[in-house]
Length: 305
Image (cartoon, rainbow, N blue to C red; front, side, top):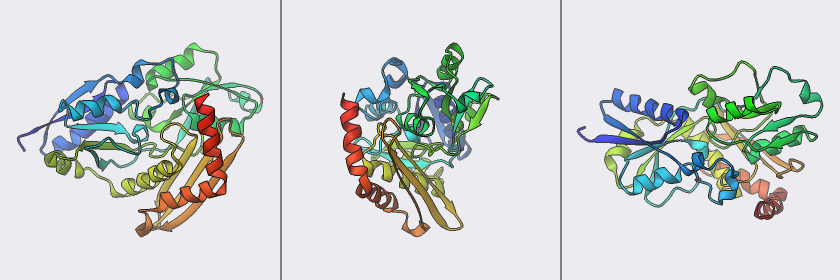
């Protein structure tokens, strides 16, 4: 075990927390590690909505390049930020045990606006569409940056609240008291899960990191991401998906919205765990056959405007 595994990560507080978590797990198994922090384009360009970059892997691209160049050996990502098709030569080696998958609304102590008009901030088309579906008379404004930046922007503006993934705020222990869980909002595929990727040719790192894989989290995120890939959402279309293992079966719910939240096509299905491999694709095919194909074409057209 004399090779030092260089762990590539973004330099935000949350990304570094994730990298240190993986580092500790590898150290506990006897591996030597080093953390290499890299600034990603997604964190730097804060005034352009993510979907306008036209590439879905804005947060992962910098680390992909660093891996291909041999500057880092493995990368740790929030799995929901990772494109469903990995770059050539890079493979998924482990999904860590999933944390909380829910979305929350961080607010300013007053939720009366939920019964009237209000303004909520999010940089996610999925959250925007689901919010407008439930609260059609609300306004949704764009919000980006890492979690610390977004919390500060919420304080600095007169918005009523902003939507966050609960897991990210819990991990770095900055979850505000003024929050409410949005149990009606279907999360992003793989929300709350961390993934490790390595070079396909690097047997040492593949073998080391595979020891950290949590099988149940791996199959659930596989289904959700397969659902996303089949709908061709990437990071851009308003798509939610969540799978969980209950009593030896997999329960799945998936949804596709129009950008304004007015149209919604959803699916709920349960299958045996042994049938997980193509389950996400089957669920997405049902959505596509049920009006999803036309809705995806409208979304693509809207995003090009």
